[in-house]
Amino acid sequence: RKVEHNMEAGKGVTNSRFDADYYHNLLHSDHVSAEARLNLEVRADAAGKGKGVFALKSFKPGDVIIKESPLIATQDTVNKLSTEVCSFCLRFVGSLPRQIALLAGQLSYDDGLVPSWAAVQSVPHADQCFPSDGIAPSVACQGGCSELYCSAECRDKAWDKYHARLCWKTRRPDTSIPAYNFEAHAVQHNDGFRTAAHILVSLIQEGDRNGGNWETAWKPFSLFLRKKWWKVKGVPHDGVDPVEWAAELKADLATSFDLLKAALGQVNYPFFRRGFYAKLVGLLEMNSVVAVVNSPVGLYFHNLEQELPKNELDEVKPWVEHIREAIEQNQATLPATHAHHAHDSDSDSEDNNNNEHNDHSTDSADQSGDSKGKEKRDDDSDNDNDNNNDDNDNDSDNDNDHDDDNDNLYPPCEGTGLYAIQAMLNHSCLPNVEVIKRGMSERDATIVIYAKRQVEAGDELVLSYIDEDELGLEDRRSLLAFPYLFHCTCPKCLLEETQQLH
Image 1 (cartoon, rainbow, N blue to C red):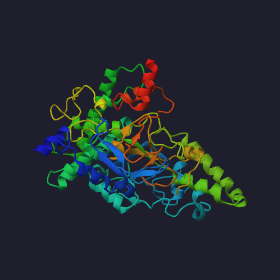
Image 2 (image 1 turned 45 degrees about the horizontal axis):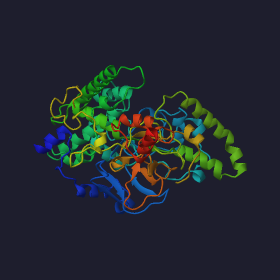
Image 3 (image 1 turned 180 degrees about the vertical axis):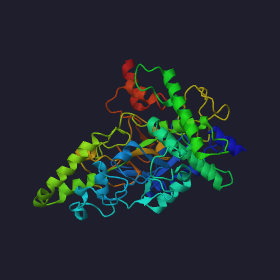
Image 4 (image 1 turned 90 degrees about the horizontal axis):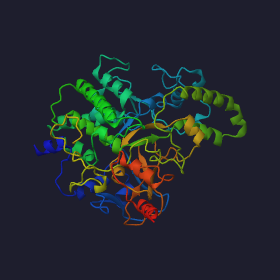
């Protein structure tokens, strides 16, 4: 009963002390690269900010500190119009001709690995300019829907965690299928509903497999700060009434939850309530990052231009120009997804798009009951206290880097990712680490955290939650207020504040 109460309340399921063994095991899990296991440590107190991640050795600028795969990752729906990836790990799947045809708007449901589009019946010099493992063969969903996977392992993991209950069981849209109606609403209103549903269903699946005990599945998510969605989703622009905006979000979420209930059928777990669902969506708003996987198509065209002798390149130029023109025309017709990033070694930080995504925020409550930093708590006491009146809507609760033109023409896979260790990194407007995706070095949703400047043994690892370089003190603090809910007192902010006073 205690576990159920804590789960429903969103308080996690551990006792009131800092669980050092849990964080040690988290660093040694399959989600984290081997080098991080010996070189990092999670500590209970980071200068009054709650938990923090600390280096146990020195790192030079540019050194890889950690590679981390997501607890959960979901491709943006709009991005599916340009890229075909594994629905579980976001690795590109299919074939090079198929990916090119998709970018050009020349791919149909019935096209195989080599689409019917004549232009890609033969892709020149692919064996020379494209790695044989650059794109994984696609594996179909066992339920018969249109989701694809890079392996039977990813397919089975997705099925066991959440997809078995959310599969349409058909490749075509069908409004008679409740799961389709839920997803269609999410596409129109907030893709985060889909990711939140995946988390929620994974808890249900875990409980069903283990006699009602979902503790193991919930614990990683219990580390994140979470508030109801409308409390952390700032108004889109000046002139929008905040009360009306919150009411609109509440209505959208209520509809989404009703559609999800219809899709899942009878669910008897006490946490399956609208208020808890609202906090899962808020959790994603505050903690998720844009998961980026660079396009293998861009790598192919980059290699084609860089590696072919001039006479051979001249022979294929008309084909290249034809393909590029078709892609440009099709991409111009598509709706925008997340702001595209530059994926080179200098400017492709995944946390570098003006707060477009909501990354790296902090855990909900450590075992001492604190949020990530006391400065990040607001005056409401609703952070993890939704066991009462849970459905009320009140607010008391290959390392080749390709150029920017290729990145714009051949967009990456973009989605939402949630990362346990990365999310425990505290913010600073003078970060010593950054999240970067370099070329095709990582072919799935794995993120790579590099040292941005010298890091000494014993230093806390801190990154910027915003694009801080060109912003003044007040603008930075304003961006951090929503959705991160704290007043920044990092060394840079305190110095500028002192300078203003004098």
